[in-house]
Length: 435
Image (cartoon, rainbow, N blue to C red; front, side, top):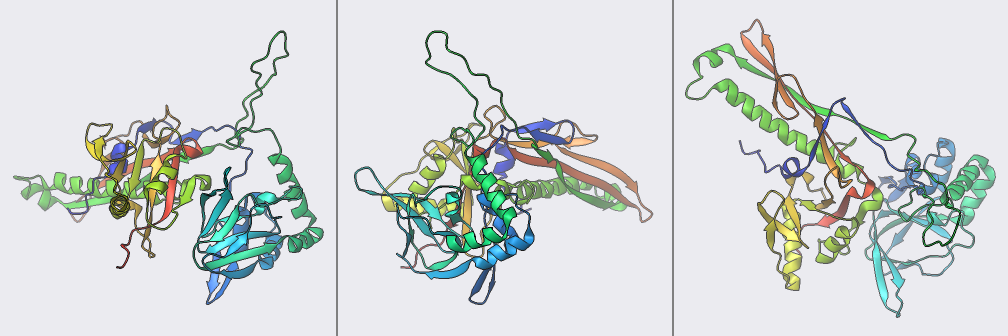
């Protein structure tokens, strides 16, 4: 059976037994509103924003008036950009909101000693400028320079002000957003816990409490199922030297486990590629995965203990290391085996991440374990007729055609306990440059 893979994600995840079929993640209240990615429709050379996806802008999160959203989407105009073009300069007043439909835009800032520092890249679906909502005389904190040709959707602030005069509900929503953003919060955007430190004498100690999210995320166990059918004649006659029923079950279980790992990566409800916080996603600086990109991904969370990447992404990373004369060593993993490591963190092959039509992929970095507030796999604590953890085989009887039937089921899910438990390096190009 060639489709059996190393299944590194299944083997390396710490698994938590769920007794009730649902796993609740109670998180501290987040005041900072996260941002998502805007989607587009393209008709030939014309690009338009899908109105409903404008709620992915942090300032519009939770706004539901579809008519106003449609009018707002119509205010965006498409602008073709070229490599090297500057969209905004650091310190200039903010006059526009930019949403990238296609292309790469670098964020550059002047360093303390006059150097130009690279803060990151924004790309397809990302936006910049909406953070100026509710700020008096906002100015650009960084220079925006296009590194590739592309299409940028532009919203003029004057046009937005005209819409606000006609849509009081939108104005009230943006004012509420500005008010909530001004609430006391820590550097992670969580509701502040009032403390006093370094005081002397009989100072008044502040009272406080830890505020939790009102609607915590609950992960219900998903499943993969199939009904294995084996004719009784096969089970009776062809059971030596190998029991055909056992062999059929073994191969069926292998395929279910392969599908289970694919779901942990790609399922839209809980899969890691779709449920990683957008604040924990970065884009490669130039296309291929460089050591600088891996360092940026590593620095986004504490105690990163695993990378997962498509084998071709690992090869592309090694090519970039070869160009710089860097030697990447193999080190010991948590189970004693040896694996490629970067900065002491093992890099595990995971082919199920996949490669897009544009020959790009993603690299996953994570912190694992419930005690570290990391990523955990979820499975039921106990099952009837269980043959493996989280997987059971139940005999369904013999039908009139003399066929044995077995219901084979695996239950599972995956949960990042806090947003920075998992991060993505996206738009990783894996092709070799033409000579």
